[in-house]
Image 1 (spheres, rainbow, N blue to C red):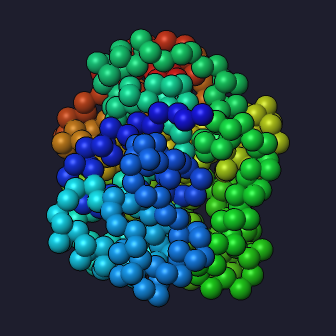
Image 2: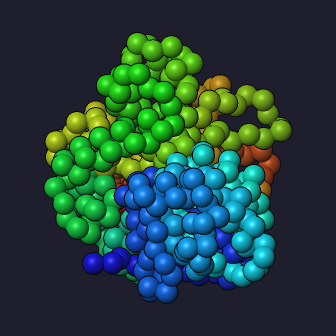
Length: 406
């Protein structure tokens, strides 16, 4: 069963502008599925997971493109980076939009090759797992999230109420289509996913001598989701050097497992912490790696708040990426330990958000945002995303926002 994706509308638009379209993201998030759905069988499908096709594309890319003329869909293009210069030659001859569609799971290698060979000719988009709105079959309603009155009122009309345990069941299961749509065994899916990831992407991206130590590092990263990055602690926990930890963290980032959220900077002040926060890009994978055996144990456990924060952050991130937009997301923390979970910064207007595992309104919540007044910038709206049942005001332009509105 195919679930409509929010990204479809932007992909159709980009296809009219660029001769090459590249969808990147981690494995098993539906990159190939969405492009096959949009092509409706009108283009040749080629996967470089096939050793014979990969060999031909690598050893004789010119013959490969003669044999498989556009329009084509090439899956896992990172296995034949030598194809990219030949694709450039082909699109420069024809200048036809939508000639080549490609997917790839190793973003660093892809972007490097694309920037060298296809600059100005390729539209690049990011895909993660299913968003909450996609799971609710409301993909077309998933506009970029802003905590402003008009958008929140629109969300109130279409968003079902989600209880505490509804949300933690969604978090624990995760957002990969293989679990959400095909209803596979959750533990078996993640176990297989990790083995595939370690054996293929990690070995391709780095010379990891002991894959078990890397798995330990992966679990250490999962245990720190929602926290400020401390590479020294992670290196010490895994008995590796700080440089190794830095390289391995880069692998997790470029393969779409984690996201590093930068702090908000402003020229007015120098009292900001410059360390990024680490977030896993799938809360279900994070819960699996940290060994929570059920939604109930996850909700009651020590990581319930951090994984809830991870889930909320990734939903907001998806709302921007799936509409083809850069995500203008930051966190705030200064050296006085004043902190705000998320700042959306658009047109120099600040939209602060806090995430709380609470269902009872507290009017003092809005006081956390007072620290932003020193910037003398407009605050366009904000609030606290929590388990309250209905949208409620906290202060001027500030609301308590139900999690289900994401």
